[in-house]
Amino acid sequence: MLRYLVCLALALLHCTSSAAQEAAPKRTFLGIEYGFLGGGATFGAMGVPLVKPYAELHEWGAMQKSKDSPIDFSKLDRFIKEYQDAGFSEIYLSLKANSRWASRGYPLKNTVPKEEYWPHYEAWLKAVVERYGSLGKKAMPGLKHPVRYFEIGTEFSTFQPEPLADYLEMLKRGSAAIKSVNDKALVLHAAFMPTMVFRNHPQPRDYPAAFAAVDKRIMHKSLADMRAVLDHPEHFDAVNFHALGDPGEIEDTVAWLKYEMAQRKYQRPIVISDTMPTPFIGWGNALAAKGFNLGVMVPPAVEKDRPRLNGYFRKLIDDDKATVAWNHAFVAADMVKKAVIATEQEVVLINTSFTEDLVFFRKLFAAGAGTTAWAGMAETKMNLNDTRTVVGLRPGFHAVKQVQHHLRDYTDLKRIKTADKTIRLYRWTQATAPVWIVWLEPESLFLPDDPTPTAKLRITTGPGNFVIESMIDRQGQTKGERKNASAKDGVLEVTLTPRPIFVVQQDR
Image 1: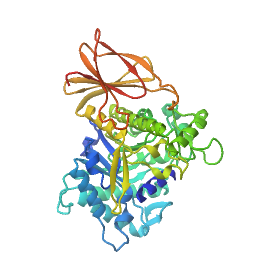
Image 2: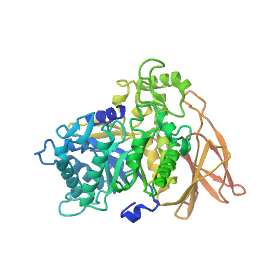
Image 3: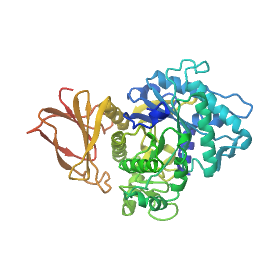
Image 4: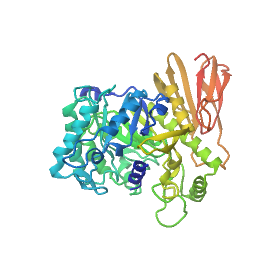
């Protein structure tokens, strides 16, 4: 329900053939969510190739007001033209069937079309793919690149409140409609949301218990429901999930999905179509220590941290400048970590969040989305013509741009194990030069008033001179601070904090 309200509030304001799908992905696209009208030129400067618009912009009911109405492409045309003109080569469309006139239980009970409106639903999907998914006669004028990614729904949670059988029927019919227009289009099922399942790193035999233990506000769909979707790979081209917890959950989620696919004797690429920064507390009241609808504690936060976090979120709501700045730095670091971990796990794409704050989820909803309500990459103001104006940029914007720069044309990205399990060290090659990113991931929560955790690490780099570049984490900063260092006997010693640093050769 909370995730539905998030999108409702916001609405107010490589794979080609079947054979190719069986191969492991070799490239990860970084993207942003949720792109808005008026933001294309700003976010195009980040250099990331992918953008995901608000699904409400182009849900069925918004594009077709009645069964006899023509399909209105105007807003989606504006969005796709604006973002393609700004340099985005990939656009991810989540296609929601929600319709006042056609859905079985509009808006919160069942998004699936009524029986008599299946032909209308299929016609809408075909029209969208004809206009944006090909360069044929019916393509949008000026379309630069065909859209490849089409998701049936948005999230396999309260966002898909319908019974399992209804959703599976919609997935089957939706996939067939899209493929009938373009058999190279990439169809995705509504994203799984396994947040909190893997906090104790369960093994396969423990998966049923781990899923069952998650608060029902998160785990609206059961493991059995998700497995029922996975039983039908003929209806999707990639396996799709949302990463809404701590960055480390990505590894466990990928391992679970690979296990499930292996049990069914197929492989598909894996997609992370939606992220949010680690919320600390989410899906409920973050401002109280007891009472009704308390939020769920999300690692690294645990129950004993609730009183401290209550105070933290009250400071954010009161616009305490130092606390807000710390949160912006935390959010920026969290997105960089998620991007690097997803890349190492060979995820096909990961959308980083958010383009703007979720202001409705501050005081009005008792900080019920946690850190996410203050997670925007940009400060914006709403205009009367459905566009936003960007009035300022946050550290998260520049940090994702920074990691995109370092990951551009990467090869051989892998994690290097260290003796200290709280240290994450990754290495890849860009052109012919090695690059490292490293950070300290403390096992317990730390907040602005706590001493910053630190550690030392000796990286075996080989001989040479290097630049140690800090992650961008301060307002007004557009480049990471850099300092020169030389490897002694082929080893470079660095000081670590929870904010990542890059180690690069000085001649790059």
